[in-house]
Length: 84
Image 1 (spheres, rainbow, N blue to C red):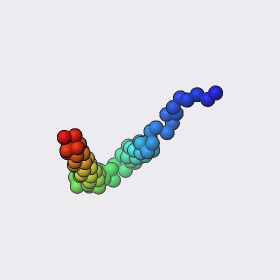
Image 2 (tube, rainbow, N blue to C red):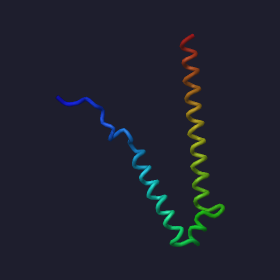
Image 3 (cartoon, one colour):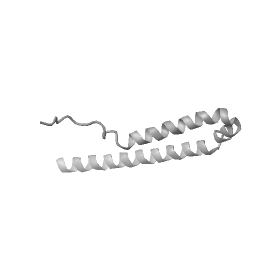
């Protein structure tokens, strides 16, 4: 008889892959500092690519949060109207 225990190997989904990519990217940046400090400095400079990417991700996160809030408020109004 087979056990009905739930396997946890596929519960992580895409987060496992994205965390592995983030780990590799972080290690590459740490290795870049002693390899080429000038490039590392330019990469992290004011108005550099890292700052622009960070700002873009913040704006995308804010937009996603606004969409979620709008969806939840619409659902709450529909529930209020339907319940009476």
